[in-house]
Picture (cartoon, rainbow, N blue to C red):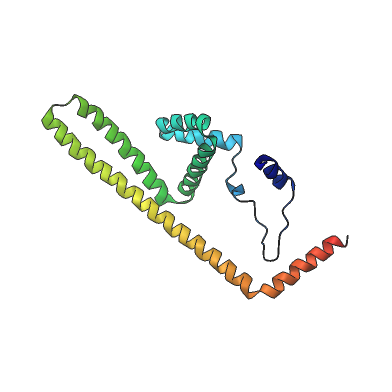
Length: 179
């Protein structure tokens, strides 16, 4: 029954109501073509082959979660492309991750005193990654707040122009139905 309802909902065109500005369907701006999916996976594989493998496994186990993660990665890549600070943070995180992995290999083969020294280095580097991720989270929060303020301004504008918006909608509807 759910599938039939969903198919019916997809086959019936949505009718915009008064105050609805034309915009893509929810998530439409995040839809990915096969080429875009391949490009994103290639970018992930270059940076973190382990993450690329995990994504490929996730695709077979939980495709919904896979596409959610892929969209998140796509947004991150877009932020990197448009924001040099984000790009620098991500580049530094990758560099520090490689350093930690190299130290972890050394740690396995070291004596106890050397292990303590290596552990301190790894702790310092892990702290740096944490701080960089927190910076990124804060930057995303600023971006989200700006988008929220923009949405609130749109709602206020629609409220202020309520009568005109309704009249315009009815005029268009009557014009369309009169053809």
